[in-house]
Image (cartoon, rainbow, N blue to C red; front, side, top):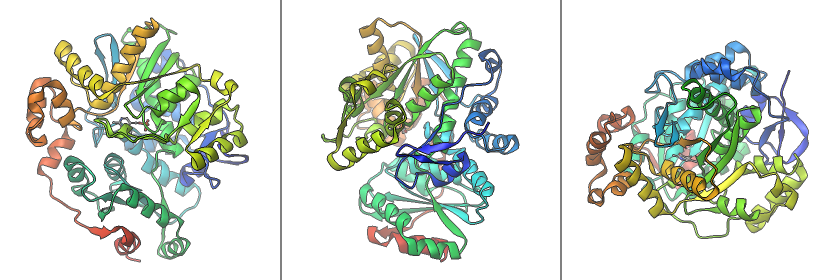
Length: 495
Ligand SMILES: *Cc1c(COP(=O)(O)O)cnc(C)c1O
């Protein structure tokens, strides 16, 4: 059966999965959604014994139906290999009475690796299927994390080039070092003199530049985006919820059919949406608990039915969740509107024009699977500290937001189902906040000096990604004015 995709803002046109991956965003500005969520066609008993890669195939073949078995398995095997520091890819760790699914064992030690290590292969396969002969040029503006994960994913993937722009002085020292030491002949990193918004609008302008598009086509190139709204980033994330449930079953932590709750530290709403899709595929998940930091737009939304981004933007210790517009939420809005593209488009227009919208009471009733919660900066730090003191386990700030919200939900609701927490980053990645939470004496210590200390107190090995930046050569030194990004791209590509 061939599963087709539609835009969340227009119900007339359908595209194949590979077309949706190639396009990223629909022409009307909407997000691609499958016409229906497919069911798993293997049983949990079968999944129990599968590797991560086998599980990935069982899940992804249901969504990406125009990929052949050979193509999809090639993508999966090229992505989930020795770039990960553990064969199981996503280990499940029991911490007191919750289960942490560690999604940070890839190249950049954060969960975006789970999708960005496979997206380049899905994209080049999709290009071939659709007879695109140009090389794909990925342009990305980054405030730190996504840029590195995209660079690592696309490095040395044949048929691709990647150019990442970041604001000089606007990312952490570790983040900058991670990017400027990136290997791969097809990778380029440019520091712009400006802020993240300048970088992002610069990239957007390049995507919309028809003249540049022609020039690039003449030289055998075309732009694409590794943006988190690409269906090629969403589908690979469904896998790890299926995998986690099967592993809980295999380890006899749960019995067959037993429902669990899932808590996800949320920013752009991609990861938790993947969990929602996993539930619809047939995984026995009861509540999807959406954890926010002090930028609690989503918490307010689930409580009131009003989405309102008109508020102060707060810089927190979980920066990857400092987001006021969760772009993937649009897929949920479309679903609870009864897959009514026009209704969804209206609400999104209100968001664009007024920064706020309110869903109808019928829509709100369909949100029963979700619970919102949030953690303050103090609650986040206290969670890291007390968990460490009780168990010796050290978690990162984003994961701590989720762990706090999970425990709070259990206390407030009396719902004592087993709970899975998506652990989205290694504590080494946000080492300064993590170590200061454990003991204030670390607050003034240099990040690099804390690395060995964290290894010592947690009894964990220093990840490769961290070792690398301590020793690696700087390979990228290009800088430019925010207004000169087009010239930089042309120079890099030699057009
Ligand atoms: C991106 C990110 C998140 C948020 O994930 P979304 O899919 O955007 O909701 C949470 N934690 C970390 C460490 C991240 O990098």
